[in-house]
Image (cartoon, rainbow, N blue to C red; front, side, top):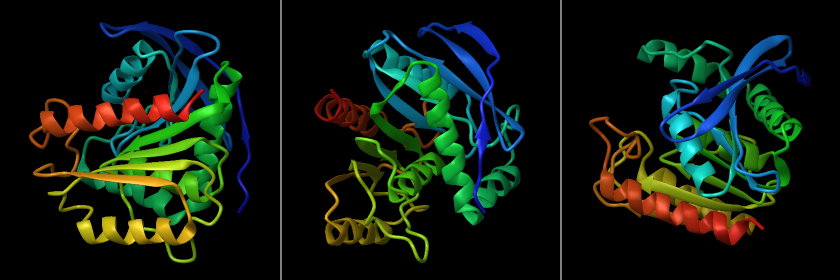
Length: 245
């Protein structure tokens, strides 16, 4: 099935301790979605940020604001729908599972978010896509689609390649930041991805952090690991500088 999207915007300005941005409402296949946009300047490079399995929350807004302070325009996408921010594990699995089963829809939603970012002034020709956990898996899906981004970055993201897919169309560089102690996404999957990327000739860098479990970057959570979070963020920051004009 081919998905189409239309865009309309309802803007809500917000201010936080980390910066100021706006929530942007848009439609995909007649369904409302709500992302978050922030930009320090008209010519800033773009980072497209994809959320974890609990949807677009304060965590992604905080990360977007951190990136804006570093000089990047950021659009934090919404892949679940406006107001859909699941808190129960069963609901989180339902929403992510639906998209894992409909990869065409997942790609269309990310493309719609990118189009929304462009309509707000984001430079989609000088951009990187990044994501956390489920968002990392979505970013790799976008990379395999042949999306015209300069880079794709995952933090403790899903790494498995669906049957029938490969990285032959991937255009940008990949940076994979992973926890060696991740029991959700194993080191076997990490190694398998490395082989796939090498065989496809995709420029990539893959780093694991000892003792870091799944979701090691999520502030305030039991699985948060400050050392791995700071090291991975530093490498991500360097990657952005190396990759974007």
